[in-house]
Length: 171
Ligand SMILES: O=P(O)(O)OP(=O)(O)OP(=O)(O)OC[C@H]1O[C@@H](n2cnc3c(O)ncnc32)[C@H](O)[C@@H]1O
Ligand SMILES: [Mg+2]
Image (cartoon, rainbow, N blue to C red; front, side, top):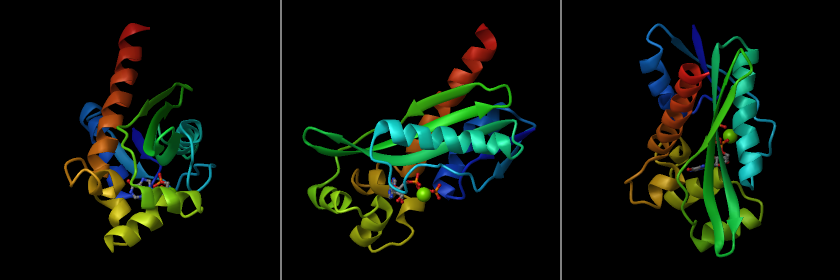
């Protein structure tokens, strides 16, 4: 069976690992999946929809189970929080969602976001590393490397797999 990941970003591809360990005969396929949301989602709702669209697009392209991860931000009273979502979809039409850990972004990043600059670009400038979104990401940078973007997506992935297995065992 094919497990699809709706991205070519290595931080997201690595996060499919729990599914590969669970479905031992599965092969992982990376799809150029459409999120159908803005390049910089600005709410939980929009970010979650992006993750679901990516997961379902993988299934539409032939995967038995599709995984979608979307990075976004969300406004709260004191500023803008990093907000990531993941979704797993299958051929039977089941969809599971889970959100990742959140941190408040520093004021200069918030200002850039409000001007319409995407987080990926702001973080590349902040770190002088054009590839930062594929590695530590914003969550890694602002937690002193203690939690990378990949680990954060991995945590979301574990929650998706856990919900999927619960459904299979309890319906
Ligand atoms: O190739 P894809 O899968 O699209 O991966 P991406 O890195 O572009 O990630 P998203 O589209 O999910 O993220 C939406 C935007 O937010 C940025 N972003 C989100 N989280 C980030 C993080 O932790 N570090 C750097 N940029 C981040 C990202 O670069 C995009 O501009
Ligand atoms: Mg993107």
